[in-house]
Length: 357
Image 1 (cartoon, rainbow, N blue to C red):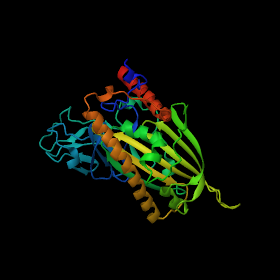
Image 2 (tube, rainbow, N blue to C red):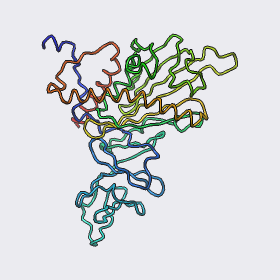
Image 3 (tube, rainbow, N blue to C red):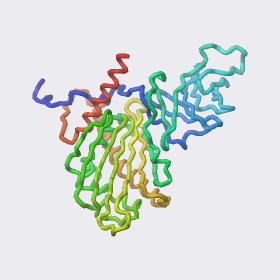
Image 4 (cartoon, one colour):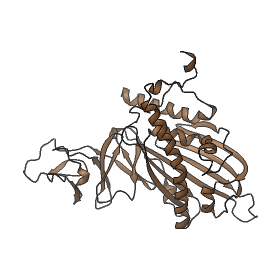
């Protein structure tokens, strides 16, 4: 080991490789995206088509007809069967061909892979590994459908490996620098305290009274620049999902009035094609009936901030991909990387377990 590689990360994030555990729930779509019209999406480097049966049950299949490989997503759904646009072969929710228009005999191999799907919160989740390994539900997101909360969701495609996003949202010291003009939360220069609760990564941090980010003031009915006491808590119960809670205390609240509020960010990542990620996110205020106008403005402001992340992460991915040294370039850790290091440790354990099975 030379001087340049001393202190380098011993567990690389594998951002140039297939680093996607299969035996877990990944987010496939927003619940409203999947209808009786086929929806195509690349998930974990596979083309997938999704639709709903007449009773609302979501279905996910390989998006490639076994006859001449036409994308099934270009077809249509008839009586819960997905009809290939090329020669009219029909496939059921289990992926088995149920009809070949030009002949009575259906080849035994006429089938495509089907994938279990479940709904949680405002999202649909897919299991692309061994279905016999399903031993848990997707992460609980019941608050997103609770009428006592006001929720805004959004989506973007990012040309970067999913781990870059996951590490980014678990180390918020970048907010004081990358988001100086959007979040305007300049007191985030000290690293949070990081711990583990079982397999869940947890970070916590308290802040002295300071102006609340303008991204969230309107959701609580606060004026911009409102001075509040803030406690931050983040959790990553799954490699696919992390939450960022802004626990806000109104230091000016009079006795008898509400003083404590919560805005919860949900950061959901799913690998698409190699080096590309589907990034779903939600911001939820524990305040009912926030107006559509405020929610839309909140969404626009969050997208503005997250596009700053997207731009830089895409440049990191491109730089590493084009540099012939790739992942061999020395990489150091800082004190604020406690959560990111744990992400890599969990990822390595999951990948090792699947590869040795």
